[in-house]
Image (cartoon, rainbow, N blue to C red; front, side, top):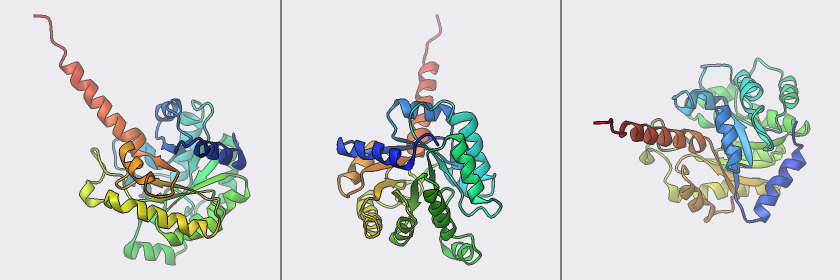
Length: 279
């Protein structure tokens, strides 16, 4: 791994000491990772959903059976992202529920490639109702993700995890998670995001984030609390939430690469189309 667990933690805590937010950027392409680093990202996180997102499809494609999630992340890391990131810790999104892999072997492979940390994505935390119940009953539930994070922690990885409620936050803190990301749901906005009316309301997000943080802190007060998703889509949204709870940063994926690309390419194309021809 490029950075040890302690080195990543020290880098992040230095940002907080300087009164700067921790910012994690999801990257689905090498160019996204390259310029997230140029912009000052503290962590770059590779998810299988990034490949689908940057191909023009909804991020939830990463939760469905459209590809081998763990193989996609290995390929993206080895061939696209790790070769162009110079100094920023790169985090691998690992599907801990994958029944076809030896997790210890997969994590050693990620270590050898130069990943500094591990995240639990795809995550069954995005699934509820009867399907979630059946996944839990058939040994493909959130507990498998907790087990994967516990193993990654024991192997010396920095671990930064998605949780969706206080109970999951408690379980991940007990497994040794260094940072908890309070996930507020699919990000709003753009061509393939949620409508704001379908998401949690922004004014409700700070309390939800805080409750998740407090559950983790009862286990380990040193856990770093971050937030992600749902109505928190823009820098202004992140500022609203961070001013109203004890989270010290934000992790974005669609917010960091899809929405900026949608807007920039659309506007650039309009400008080219507005160029007049010579009379």
